[in-house]
Length: 243
Image (cartoon, rainbow, N blue to C red; front, side, top):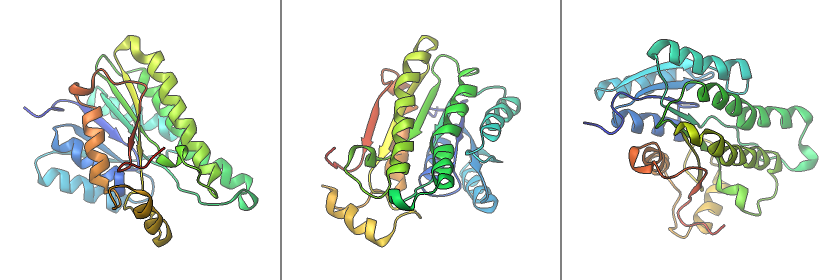
C-alpha cells in the first residue's frame, strides 16, 4: 500500500516547476492531488494527465492564491469534492528581484498577497477541516537566511511565511496537525535567470542547481507518517548552502 493512499492533497501553483514535481510525487505515493493553477490551465491539465496515465488521481482547480477569497474557495471546494483534506502545500509564489528604490506600492502589495497573505488564509480555512495526522507545508526560500540584496520585498514575504509556520505549528499541535517550511536553495525552474544560475552553482557546496524533484522528495517525506515528529521546522533544501 502506498504511503499516502486515501489522502487528499492540495498543491498550489502546481502547473509547473517545484509545484508540479510535488504534485506528481504525492500522487505517486497514492494521494488524490488537487493541482492548483491561476492562469496556466493547459499546463495544469497536462500535470493531471501525467498523474492519471500513471494510475493516480488528480484534479485541476483554478484559484488565484493572491486573492483571499480564491484561497478560501480552493480549500472549500476540495473538501466539498472529496469530503476531506489531509495535506496543504503552499507553493504558489512570486519572485520579485527589485531593489528598494524601484519597488512600487503595487509591487509590494502583490508579492505580499501571493507569498504570504493568500497562503495564510488558505491555512486558516484548512485548519477547520484538517484532522489528526494532517500536514501543512509552506515553500519558502534559502534567501531569507542569506545576505541577498535587491529582493527585500520578496524575501520579507517569504520570511513572513516561515514565521506563520512556526506559530501555527504551536496552534495546531493539539489537533495532531504538523506545519513545516521547506526552503529550497537555487533550483532549476522557469524563474531562474542565467545570472542566478551561475551564482547558485558557485554558492552551492554540491556544485549544481537543485531540481524540482529534489524539493518534491523532501516534501513527500514531511507529509508522510514517518515525519510525524517534525513540526514548526524550516528544512533547508539547498544542497548545503551555509546559512
